[in-house]
Image (cartoon, rainbow, N blue to C red; front, side):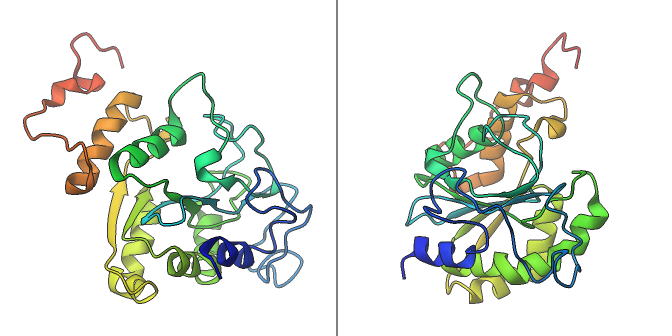
Length: 244
């Protein structure tokens, strides 16, 4: 089976028709841990956003692993977001807000430019809580999703670079261990902890700052490396007269 076929089969409970066509999803989501079965995760389709991954280029060796889907529309990366199951389709063809270069679309473009691959995008957990700040629910769902989906996604994609977005994603991948993860791919894997793309993680830095920081975090893996001589004063936080 091709990688696309394997991913489609892994997430067969999400999609109908053309799995890789944006916003194709079935009106129902079935998982042994949802509220229709053993309820270990307490998933409520009427309140919780549920997302399958966004597939990158076939031979991409880069994965982005964020924490969890949310209902917000902060960067309009997909025009429709909300509760229930969604299938975003191809990461290279995802609907992007062309009015502004920000958020996840910015990270996607930077990684394409720096690595030459369209990365594969997924979340640590596939069913986000109704309240994005509900870390208790997120932690309750982590182990189930890692076993049911994430390790199998890694085995199929066989990345050599995993960009973890946010502390929890990175911490969980470190907990599993790169040696263990590599057993699923047969390849050495590099983990990078990347600053979050969302506005909630702005940290007094703007979009251009994040591009610089992401290249720092990629280090030697970036095609356009940030020089050690590049001054921190180039970040907006340090600009004279900043009111942030």
